[in-house]
Amino acid sequence: MIRVVAPSRLHFGLFHVPVGGAEGAERAFGGVGLMIDRPGVVVVVRPAESWQFEGPLASRAQVFAARFMASLPEGARRPFQVLVERSPPEHTGLGVGTQLGLAVAKALAVACGEPELPSAQLAVRVGRGERSAIGVHGFDRGGLLADAGKRAGEAVSPLLAHVTVPDEWRVVLFLPRTADLWHTDRERAAFAAASPGEPDTLRRIAETAILPAAEGGDLEAFGEAVYEFNQRAGEPFAAAQGGVYASPEIASLIADVRECGVAGVGQSSWGPTVFAVVGGGDAAVSLLERFRGRAPAFVSRVSVGGHAVQCDPPAGD
Image 1 (tube, rainbow, N blue to C red):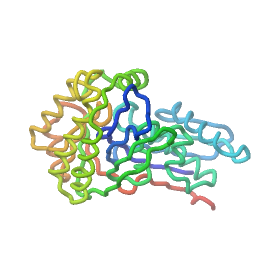
Image 2 (image 1 turned 180 degrees about the horizontal axis):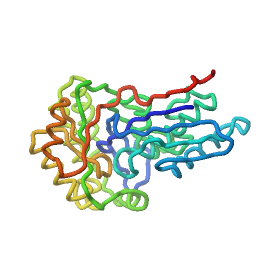
Image 3 (image 1 turned 30 degrees about the vertical axis):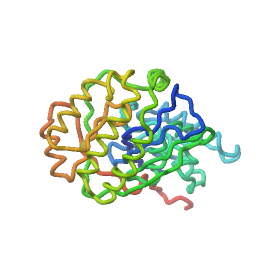
Image 4 (image 1 turned 90 degrees about the vertical axis):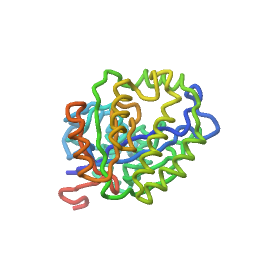
């Protein structure tokens, strides 16, 4: 039995949105994000006489498994039982597709005798990393990450920076009730209609404010920089969204949490997940109590070290 526990991904925003959604000679997309322990993705793989897929998002896991097995030599392919033991819903801003795809691929890689494959190679094999690579690099590393952006022809954007944030920091996650979900055709249309934004400004905020503040443990400076970055990163999609956030409910919640004195608040990816970074467990519980009934919410630690693999019996025995 191979069990892979993967973190979830928060995305603060992209550096550069290519005009019309098409990549050019310069680096496109890129951005900054944070890996968190909860809600996370857990995948279990066991040898089987025929392929079996169970649990939430089982059909999605089946697609990823088929892609990964097709990348192996024919003689190395064999069937497995794949159980998605835990996964949040898709299209909530938590990077579920990438984390599920990488967890399935990692579990199968270990089971098939290729345990050392890095996340970038796994991503290519299962078709992830089309735009952002925060979740790809974060699967292996955890923590706060910036990816440089992709040039035409690159399979996965290279890692720009990785920072381990203070262990005491906590992230409060809110899921406001909204009918606006951004994915597939709606997401592609938003990219096609997006304005260029301010890639130089966003990269400067990341490199001179977000990353140094996290490395120095300055929560207030980090929070203010993340809030500004997140707002500016939403501007290219304002015409499609009706504002810098994906819905009025999200915008209202972010404003209200900020009014409580929490600086680092924003929308992860397309939402609806709203994140708030606070200095410790007491502050997180206080925020939960203050917004009880407003939206479903929970607290997470920041992921340290990325995914974990558990083997029973140990691989190779």
